[in-house]
Structures are given as C-alpha cells and as structure tokens.
Length: 271
Image (cartoon, rainbow, N blue to C red; front, side):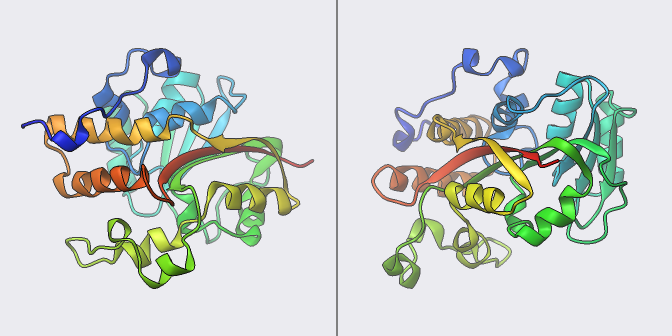
C-alpha cells in the first residue's frame, strides 16, 4: 500500500515508555483492539493497580479478550472477563488457544443487570473503552462497586474528546464527527455526541461519595497513539474506512477542539 502523504510526520510510541509491553510487537498491541489505545492504554492503566499473583480482577467490557490475556499473562492474576456482545464460547476458545483456559473465565453479561458475584469478591475492576456506553452515573457505580472489596481499585481507561462541543457545534456537528456507518448507524448520535470529557468522569467518581480518586489524567502521548494506530492499519491494509475517518479526526484535532484523547482514572473504593 502506498504512503498517504497526510500521515507524513505521524509518530509511534517509544518502546521504553511501555516496559509492560516488552516482547510485544505493534501488531500484538493492536490485535482485536476495541477502541483507541490498544494495549498501550491497558499498560498505562495498570500502573495505578497494585496487582499480585492470584488476585481476582473483573475485566468489565473485555471486548475480544486481549486486555484479559494481558492482565493474566503480565501479572499472574485470575480474570473474570465480562462482555455483553462477545460470545463467551468465542472467548473461551481464544483463552484456551492462548494458554489461559484456567486463569481467564469468560462470561456474557449485561453489566447494568444483576451481577452474579459475591459482595467484595474482586480485588480490582479494570474497565477499558466501555464504561461510557453504560456506566456514567452514581447509581451504576454503586451497583458495580458492591462487588469490589473495600480499598480495591477501580481503574478506567477510555478514548473520548478533550472538550465539550460548543453550542454552534451542537447545532452544526463537525463533519469529522458526524457520518454514517456502512450498516446505517449515525456516529454523531450514537457515539461522539454522548462522549463526556475526562474532567467529567473524574468529577463523577469524586462526587459519588463511593471512591477516592488516586490518579487521573489524559495520556500525554494520546495523539501519538492515534497516529500509530493509523500507521499500523495502513501498513496492514486494515479497516480502511475507519482509518480514513481517524486520519481526518487527527488532522482536524490539531487545529480545533474538541480533539480525540485518551485518559486513565484510578480510584479506591472507600472503606
């Protein structure tokens, strides 16, 4: 595939900034990724977790299970991998093929419904690129956190936008955030319009009364990670339509707000 001149100057993350991914190729970092950041985001998230071999971790909204495999292999923890859309049978087969049949338990569950876990069962909850679809309320936090032990860590990492849309943008959505998916879905209504800023999420956690926020911030190399994903997809001919939109969003975000970003938030459940 030829070089896209618009991507001249696009960057890649430095390997030394991600020691958790030593031995991983770039393809490994983005394999079956659900949302921006891939395992680079997962690696940054885990720096705020005090994980020990044998800990039980809930990977909430695990997607196709790459984050679960990363947690189990890198930290020796037991993972309960929960997702609404990815079939448990698929995840079970994948875990067995990758050598994690005994340390990753896949489940199909709606996180907003009854959760079949004991109170205080999990040492940590890990949630990457999914909470915005179902968990943006104090009620949901209370519903989920009953299953996290006191002083346990709830860790969220997410792709989102770095500012709210202006009234003018709400009336006339920027074209880079307003388009139709091939299947007919409206990305503006179904995705970008619903995104909340990193500060909004930090305020929700802090004001819930359920958690003490211990670490929070945008990834300083968020733009680099989006650029790197584009380079990876172009090199391998992956997801051409999504990649085209991502290029346009990156270039637009260099001159305008809101721009796409990534953040990580770690909080401890109050005693």
